[in-house]
Length: 106
Ligand code: FES
Image 1 (cartoon, rainbow, N blue to C red):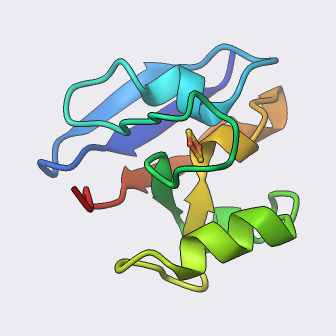
Image 2 (cartoon, rainbow, N blue to C red):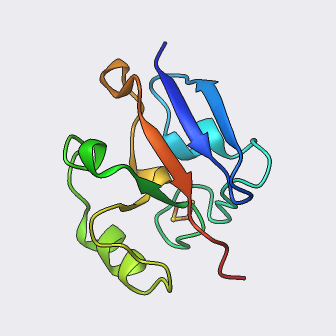
């Protein structure tokens, strides 16, 4: 079971034992001050935006054109670190991942 460190919107870090075979968004959305994920993972809202530490960002599969378009429209887009957490499938290879929930744009 991979373990992640998640910094929420209040700057509080939580160590999380993640479930594999589901998305990163599904693993973190129930944490306090975490992602909203209002489209439920359909890659159409960008409210599951997170920042992945640069070392990890390079080890993840690349963004799809749809993910890139949504992220580039975000006020807090960071070309190196931004990802939509609903588009990242959790596997054991992600053990040790560190991420931060992006600011809310509501
Ligand atoms: S949950 Fe809507 S884009 Fe990820």
